[in-house]
Length: 318
Image (cartoon, rainbow, N blue to C red; front, side, top):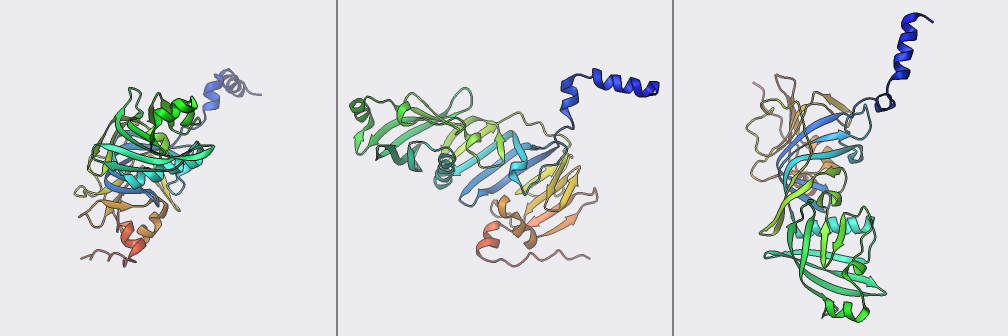
C-alpha cells in the first residue's frame, strides 16, 4: 500500500464516529405561502394567510417529494393559520382514530368567543357530554382549552366525577404521541402534532377566535435560505412559492428551486389540494422566466374537482 493510501486510510479510521455516520446532509427547500386555502385532507382546510418555512427531506441525499408527504418535514419559521369548526372537528377525529382514547364522536363548533365541544365518553356505557371552553396558549406553545362549563348526560360533570370518584385526567387520558393531554380540568392540544402529514414542526405563539374561525399564530426553528429578492411573479397575491434547495414534483426534480404556484383567479384565496394537485396542474399552464424559474398558473381545486372547469387558456404569445 502506498504512503498516500495509508495516510488516507488512517485519516478515515481516526475520524470521529459521529462525523463518519452523519453522511450527506438532508436536502431542504424553502416554502412561502400567501392567502391559500390549503386542503391538507379532503375534509380539512387550513386557511393559510401567511406561512414561511422549509421542507426538510426525511431521507438523506433525496429531495423532498411533494407527492409523498411522509418524505419530508415542514419546519415553520412563522405562520398565521385559521380553521373553522368542521375542519377542527375532522382533524381532531383523525387524531383520535390514530390514537384511540375514551372520547368518541367529537364535534367542535365556534360560538362567539368560545369553543363548544360535544361527544361521548366511553366509560362502560357511552356518556354524552358537552363542554364550553375558552382558548389560550401555554408557555411551552400548547393550546389550552379551559372548560367554563361541562355537562355529561345533562348533569354537571363535577357531580358525576364525585359520584364515581374519578378525575378529569382519568376520563380524558390521552396516549403518548396523540398531541393531546389533560391538565387538571383543562385539555391541552399540540396544534402541530395534530396536523396530518407532512410532519409539522412549530409551536403556537398566540391563538384567538375571529368570527367563525380559530386563528393560530405559529413560530418555529425554520431557517430557509436562498430566496431571490423577487418572486417569479411579484404581483401575485395568492400563491405558494418554493425556492432554494431542491424539490420533486411527480417526475420533475427542480434544483436551486424557483417555482411559484399562482392562483389563476385572485379574487378569493388560492384553493389548493396537495393530495390532488395534479388535477390543478393539468388544468393550468406554466411559463419559464428569464432567470430559469417557473410560473405555474392553476385554477382553484374546487373549480376543477366539482364543476369540471375547462383547462385554462394558455397566454397569447405575440
